[in-house]
Image 1 (spheres, rainbow, N blue to C red):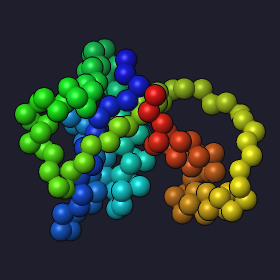
Image 2 (image 1 turned 90 degrees about the horizontal axis):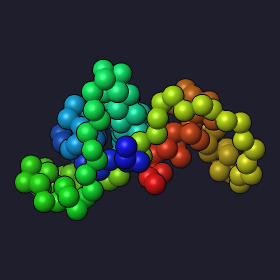
Image 3 (image 1 turned 90 degrees about the vertical axis):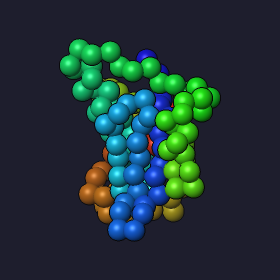
Image 4 (image 1 turned 135 degrees about the vertical axis):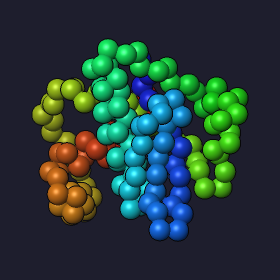
Length: 137
C-alpha cells in the first residue's frame, strides 16, 4: 500500500471553504475554513476512507504518482488556478500510540498549546496531527 496520495487543494470560491479531493479515491474529501484546517482534515479523511475500504473487504486503489496523474485527462481538467496538487500521508488509524520525550523551543510550545486549545484537543493530538500533515515517505 502507498505511503501517501496526491490530493488537489481547491481554493474557496465565493461563500465556500477550502476543499481537498483525492483523484485516486473518489468520495474522499476534506474541507476547512482555511488551508491548514483542510490539510489537517485531509490526513484524517484519507486514513478513514482507506480504513472503510479495508473494512468492507474491498481492494484499496493504488496511489498514482503525480507524473502518472499528469497523463490523466480528468486530473488535468481539474488543475487550474484554483486547484493545486499536494501529497497527503497515509497514516493508519489503528497505529498504537507510543510515549516519547522531546525537546522543543519554549515559544513554539506555547504556540502549540494555544493552537491545541483553540482546536479543543490535547497537545499530543495536535503535535500528532501536525506531523501527519507534513510527512509523506
